Length: 166
Image (cartoon, rainbow, N blue to C red; front, top):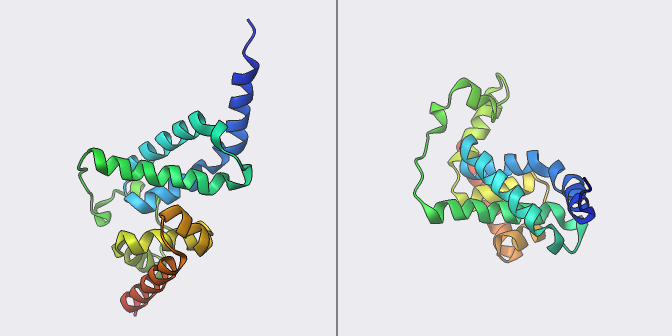
């Protein structure tokens, strides 16, 4: 039984271009939603949409921002469709908290808690810059903001963190 050459090529392209970014997508989405189960769902939907739209990707070097944009939109769609039950991060089970924690470092725990307390408008660009390594220009493009607005949000996020950690 012969398989379609195009379908096989699509699968290979997906595995080469998209699949390696799954863990980064999960970390990004988890920082957005703070729910490991929802993060898994959003990443799965992101991967599916990326697979279906891979032929529309014009520049392979733009794969990471392209995927993060899809993930961000998928995350937003979840909240457009329904109101989700939220969970307090302090109530996570040991297994769940292991997903976002390092063992026994109170400074890291304090910083993580302070980041989670930031408003989404401040947390998202901070995570994109610090954890994902995007420039302010790239963040502006992904969030649909001017670069100056991103810089302002980053500055305010850092000030809020410094005020809380003191």
